[in-house]
Length: 183
Image (cartoon, rainbow, N blue to C red; front, side):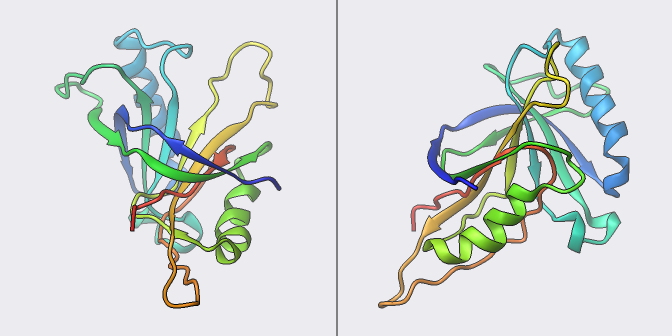
């Protein structure tokens, strides 16, 4: 699996926070789609992101956290019935790997966190793992790729490099990356 290091730009997003079982993210997604439609932000406008604060594989269902986001030029009016708010994905150095396939098991996230990261000389950054999700356009039919970033930074202590894993979770088809905290 190929891993690329990128500099992700600071990105303003409109975000809907999901707190609770991962199995209930569909209803949160539908609320977010409703908000996008009401605000005339179509599938061809903005980039869609999923910010995963916890890993559903090792988190109690009631503690699962995810933000569903779309990039926006200007701040949005946070007074809306869906609860969409303003947030920012910070500029960060990310390690990125592509995932193509089902979101039931995201092999690229596992590879980056458990295989690539420990051998890379990088450590997880302070921002959680996030995914850039493809818009489902005509002709995409399940062959679309998602992109994700695992924030990380290179750390050297004496002559030995140390990796400090994060509790950031992951889910989705994506390229994934790691944020540089500038340490």
